[in-house]
Image (cartoon, rainbow, N blue to C red; front, side, top):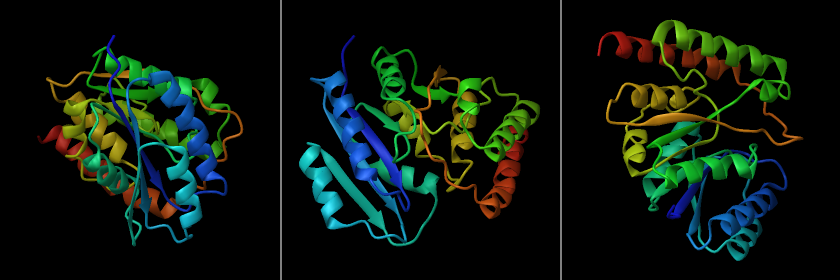
Length: 240
């Protein structure tokens, strides 16, 4: 197996205190495991209302060899932020996850090694019942309802589309950059597009949540808005 260069894209919106230390810790572990392949980090500030200081950025740049900080003033949503960062990525493999690295480094590395082995063009994190035992009840309900709707209306083999850990090669990158949804359901749009493209190989991979992860509150206004996004995906599925 040939180890390939890796870009990590991390969307950032009002991160919790100590976020820069989590990035440094996780990235140093990952860099050690993939050496001599190069690791590059892209942090995308999605219009945070909390100031990200030059001291925090300097700390990151001093600890991580290759890091880019991208920013724009108005919050656009996680899907937009990731496309913004992925578009700038240069490496053979690109993986995105959340700024607090909620999944174990081993989970991320399993996705990376699978892509290095060319087992697929896109590898998506898959969460099992152990994950749901650690998350707030409202998130469980929303996730289970969405997975049910995906099976009923879209008939997709991969129903866990919303896991915040995914990776792809350059073929997968091209497809990802064709997504259009800016917020919650961009993941579903991406996996649905991949599942319906015969030339794309997409596989799920079991991932593990770290202990002690603090979940942000679900924005119900955004979820209501995303109902229209789901309807658009269903319409494309049946009237493509």
